[in-house]
Figure 1 (cartoon, rainbow, N blue to C red):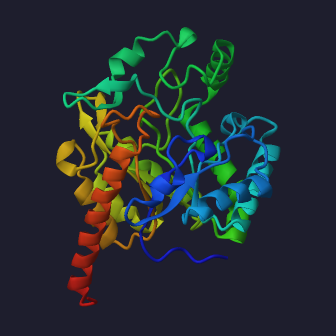
Figure 2: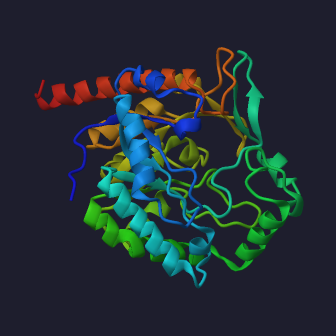
Figure 3: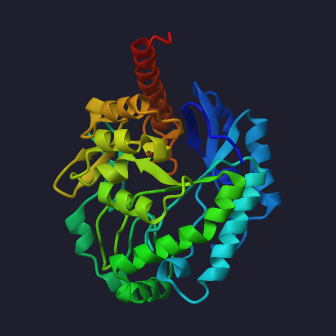
Length: 357
């Protein structure tokens, strides 16, 4: 079994060889230890081969970057629905974990959101300063016809027939049933996690409320308490996404960061600007640049023993960059630099307090 890392490691999302951002650019960001990536050409539910995984590892390694975090190994909808064939799919997932373990992977980020991993109403919202960002307007989303959905970022993921079929399949799935299926899934893969030392880090629902009749079950502190009680294994942990959790104004982000620091294996740190009760746009990472206390989150993590992976999450598209919305190079690099500064300051503060300087 591998030992967990003993300090924060800064990472960067990389979408494989098709990513417009070269690995050598990522390496040039100060204190960047590795990339967060995935195998993108294997159907959901099938096993990721050792060969495909090692090709990814070799690519990042040549650039001087580690590949210790995978985001994500998608969970098949039949597992979430609790269908009869789920045991085969769970066995495949467990084998993928074993194969990832052979490549030195230590953490797998995943989610258990039905149908949609995330939802926004606008991908290139024009800001006053000329930058663009992801945006969510709740009323605009709720006015859409569920039987004829056209959603930014999802139009190419499903045909209309496929989407309607999935929405129909979830009609009998309650919050309780979806949670039961999550627990069943986790119990089915924990042996593989114990063998490899890989930590599973569940991503919160984005945004953290029900929509189109689809239940959302990982939305805040109550969800985590329930999850850890059901599956106490230490490899069952959290991806702490400030943006997803922060969209729910009921969530105390610094408080949750402090409480769960030792079960947070991966942190997605991004900023939101509240525009309404359930409306928001994504902003630069700086604490005073939005509505979330990013400084308070980092300070709480460090003070309470966080030793996981961090990545600057969605940034704006700035300086004329026209890449994947939320995943340009420039603003995420600025975010990484800002987060490095916060972590360094918080770590030095703790060292001085504990007399270890």
